[in-house]
Amino acid sequence: MTTHLPVTPPWTCGGCGADWPCQTRQRELLAEFDRARVSLALYLAAHLVHAAQDLAHVPAGRLHHRFLGWTR
Image (cartoon, rainbow, N blue to C red; front, side, top):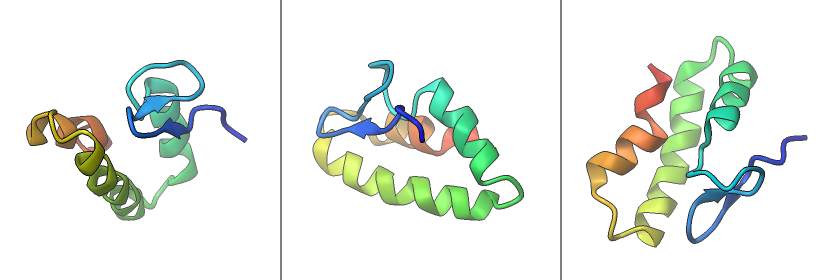
């Protein structure tokens, strides 16, 4: 089990303290959702919706890039 889970409301990584999803969690998610990129995008989009509520001061484009931009 990973220690790189989100800590809310700041949306930091519980494992390393970086913005979530951190690079380690990104690699883990890519492995977990291997051959299921649409499912990965839906999973992250759900987190994005919750994060947008907690991080209203962060520009939407930055949140989109942080949560979904790296999945391509």
